[in-house]
Image (cartoon, rainbow, N blue to C red; front, top):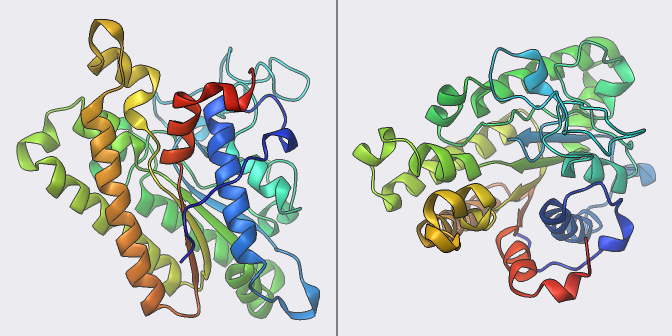
Length: 311
């Protein structure tokens, strides 16, 4: 299992990635490269595809094609994308980490949404995002937002495997599935929305048992991925969710300070996620499971903004 150190590579990324997503992405890429470089690919192969599961941080447009109010296919979203003023379904003014990670691995500049009806075979072969803005580890989170649950994203991935197998055959498909890079970025909405802002789970769980539920769902998902041939997975921790604007407005009082309870919940879940991934790494020794810390990099930029220049 990878440790959770990170290094700044902000000069390598375009300005249209919002500040806190930039820090998360910087953290991820340095750690992923460190571990991918330790895995030899036959005949000097490159990474065949980047596959992403998760929520709005990595959704590249899937919610455009489902019946939900959780959409961003309108201005000011996309105001810095491509030629400008081009909403794409990304929850950003421009790119999202899915795009940046795919580009840094040399796969492609933009990672398309799986549900995009204009996808071509080559788009599928080099990877897609199955992420859906508003989704969570907790199945209830996705139900409340009417978005694609993690299990639904897994079903789409299995459908994806069938499609590429029909196109390029079983052997090449097995290679693509096993040698691709998989990114999972999800969980913030469980704490920020389902637990903090709705009554349903708080009646059933205290925060300790709720984060147990989340960690169990995360473990089950990773094991499901392993079961269909996935071997190289990076999983983002939950960031400093109590310091994002919505949580500061709702729970930060008149001075809009960070929500301590949400941050403590994130820390608690992250420790459980790390433990679950460590156990799975021992169980699945032929896999590479990398914990990607997004909590501490974002906390550092909030506490030491001068280190990161002006955005």
